[in-house]
Image (cartoon, rainbow, N blue to C red; front, side):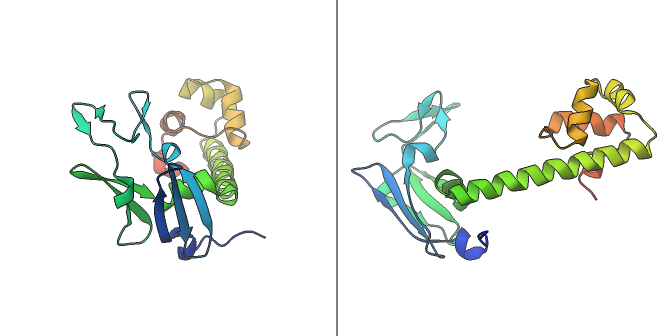
Length: 181
């Protein structure tokens, strides 16, 4: 049975830092409960995990203080965790936690990406035919291999923005034209 991704699955009911394990213990309003390692949540900065206790990591010219996990709180909207870090706060959105900890949500994201890939592929094919172009001609105009056009139209490869921009230009279209149905 597919889960309903409603507001209750997006809003935190509780969140606490478990210091001895270096984990976040979060529960969503729908009752889903997860333990997530903090080093998996925050990005790497200069190759080092951001947020290890006692560390200060340079981000560009500024220095970012480590997160104060025990002072973490649920944001006003309920869908973000706010962790003080010196004079700033690190925001951790609900979907980052779910994408890391919830296999059903990861599958949902993969399904959405696959559907988007198929939809864009069908749209590229329709616009190519409307323009009276063969796959080989479109490929030549876009500066890509014909197999790439075929794989895009078949929904076999995820379209990257630079590739889609080149195809839109070759078709004499705007980028948003490829997203419309």
